[in-house]
Structure formats: C-alpha cells, structure tokens
Image 1 (cartoon, rainbow, N blue to C red):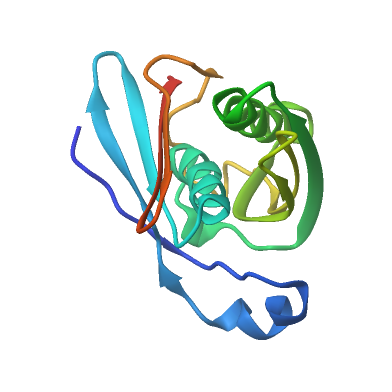
Image 2 (image 1 turned 45 degrees about the horizontal axis):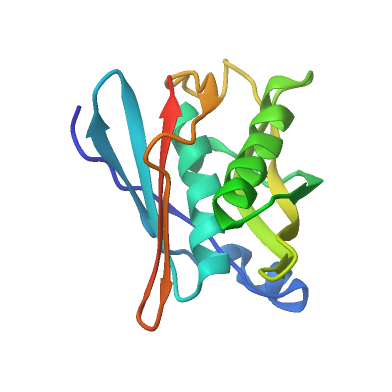
Length: 166
C-alpha cells in the first residue's frame, strides 16, 4: 500500500470556525504499512491536535475527505483509565458515529475539552451523511485496536500511532 497524505481544514476555536472554512492547512497524518491492517500516524502542535488529526485520518481512510461537506455536527464524549485507553475510546466513539445510521462521515474534528489528568475528552465532528453517490468508498474500518498503540507528548513531539482493523 502506498503512503497517502491528504488535505483538509482544521480550526482551533469556535469563533474562527466560520472564518477558517475557506482556509486549508496541511494535513498532519499519514498511513503506514502494517500486516493485514493499517497504522495511522498523526501529529500536531500539541497532543490535542494529534488526537484530532488521528480521528480525521481514520475517516480519510474510508473516503476522500475533499468530497465531504461540513453540513452536520455531532458530539462525542470519551473517558479512559490512561492516555492510551482515552485515545482508543475517543476513536471508537467517532467510529460508532459512522457505523450508526445514518452513517456520518467526518471531515474535521475539534476537541472542546481535553483533560489529560482525569482522561476525559469532549469533541465535535463536522461532516455529513455518507452517500455512495457522492463519497468514494475507501476501506471499511472494522475496529480500533490497542495493538502497538503509541502516544508521544514531549516538547517538540506530539504524535500518536494507532493500528485500525480493516
């Protein structure tokens, strides 16, 4: 499988949300080869952005995000016992949104609360109902896995690695 990079938009505050819809930034994720699965590698200026980018990467594997409009918003809450389980539950909640009918494909994620001490996240996903006539079908993501999940949150390095079951 070839390495894939995509472009989408990202904003960091509700006030800038409407203003920034026309501004596109470089996507901060990539897909890495992994036996029978795919590994998401995402990074950001902080760990919050790395989590957001990882969620977007998961949806980018399901379809071409350029075809997705931000006409709908849905919220998730996730909790964990540590940062690894928090990342797992964060992604799993967004995967559930896609799997529940009507299927919700997300183009952008914004974490509104990120509690690294109590391991809680609240986030919003922006996208639309998945439609095969509009959105090219990529690869189905069956599940998030704990296998080789990694989080780096140090000065100058905010990265996550997640293997998804496809």
